[in-house]
Image (cartoon, rainbow, N blue to C red; front, side, top):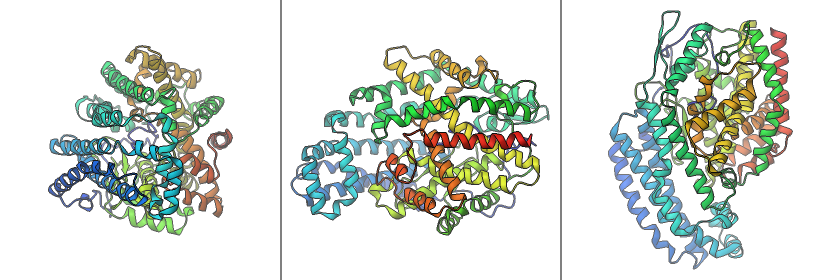
Length: 613
C-alpha cells in the first residue's frame, strides 16, 4: 500500500515551512516493534532456514494430491502454512529493510525473503494444473464431502475460472525462479530515488534552506510565496529531468514485463491480464475513463475558482498545491490520533474501540530519518500478528491525512483477519483503497464542520476538493498514461523517456489547459509515480473514491444499513472478488452511477467554495 505519491501530494498549511516534524506532547510510541514478528535477526534467520526446508518438501505432495479429498486437503493446508510463514518472514524483512535503505544486512534479508517466496511458487507450480485436471465436477463433490476444504473454495474456483489462460507447470516454475527479475524495475526505482539520486537544495525567500527530496518537495510546493513555489517546481523537476533516460529505461522494462506476461497468458493486453486476475469487468476501467473525461468541465471550473481564491492573474501548475484559506493548526502524533478517532465515530463503537487500541500500540514507524524509505505503506502480510504502518510523519495536514489513510488500510486488515481464515483474509487492491479514502473523507468533512473561522473552513474545503481532484481526475489521467504506454509498447513502438514525456505532456494539456498553463518542465512528472510499478493500480483510486464517497456520505448521514454493509464488505476480506463485494454492498463500479454521484459531490463543494470566495 505505497502512498509515497499515490495521491501525488495533498496541499497543506502554508503559514510556515516545517523542515523537520515536531512531536511535542506526544504520548504515543513512534517506533514499531518487530519483536512481535521475531525476537531478533537471529530468530528470523532460524525461521527462514526452517521455512526453506519446509518449502523444499512441498513437491512430495504431488503424488497423492488427487487421490482423495483428505489428501487433497492435507496438501493444500501444508502449502497454505508455507505461504503464511513466508509472508511473515517477508514482513520482517521488508520493514527492517525500509527502516534504513543503507543497511546492507537488512537488504540481504529482504533478498532472501524474496528468494524464498520465489522458491515457494516454483515448488508448488504443479498445484494449479493438478486442480484443473480434477475439474469442476470433482472439486464440487470434494467440497461437499469435506467441510475442512471450505477455506480453499474461492481459490479453487478461481483456478478453474482462469484455466484458459493457465501456463504449463514448467513455465510457471521458470517464471517463479526469475521473480527477482520481474521485481527488479521497482526495486531499482526505489533504490535510485531512496539512496542514489541527489536532491537539490534551495533557499526560500524567508531565508530557509530546503532539501528537495520527495518529502521536502511536497512541503515546499505549497508555500504561500508564488515566486518560491515556481523555483521549487523547476528545481525539483529539473533534478528528475537529469535522470530522465535512466528513469525511462527502468519503467520501459516494467512495461515490457507486463506485456510479456500478458502474451504468455494469452490475454489481449496487459490491461485485460490485470483485470482478469481479479475478475474485474473491463467496463469498470472504460466507464471510469469515459465519466472522468465527461467531468473535465468541472475540473476546469475548479481551476478557475482556485485562481480566484488565490487572487492570481493566471494559473500555473505550480499553483495547484497552494492551499485555499489558512490554518495555523498543526498535529502532533497524539493530536493526529485524536482527530482520527473523532472523525471516524460514525463507523460505530466497535470500529472506534478497535482503532483506539491498535493506534495506541507499537504498530507504526512514524518519524522520518536519514536512509529511511521515503514513502508510506501498510503491511498486513503477517496474518498471525497485526498490521504494520511505515510513515514519514510531518505535523501538518498532509501528515495527518497520510496517517488516517494508512490506518484505514490497517483497520481493513484488522476486521478481515478477525473474520476470515488466512486463506481468505487478504483482500484485493480494488477494494483496499475504499477503506483508506473513506476514512480520509470522514476526516475532511469533520475538519470542515469543526473549523474555527472562515479562513480555516476554506482551507479544509480546499483540502477535500483536492482529495477528490487527485482521485477522480488525476488518477484516471495517470491510468490513461499507463494504458497508452503499454499499448504503444505492445504495438512495437520503441519505448523511451522522450515518448513517455510526450505522452504525459499531452494528457496534462487535455485535462488542465487552457485554464492552467502547462509547460515542458512538467512532462517528466510520470517518473514520480511509484504505483506504475504495480500494473494498472492507478485506476483503482478513482473507483475507490467513487465508492468511498458514497459510503462516507451515507454513513455520516446516519444510514445504519449502509454502515453495516460497508463493515461487512471490509470483514469479507478476499472471500469473494472485490468487484462483487463492492457491488453487493450497494455500489456497481461498472456503471456510470457512482462516478456521476462523486462528480455531483465535487460540484456541490465547488458551489460551497464559490460562495466562500
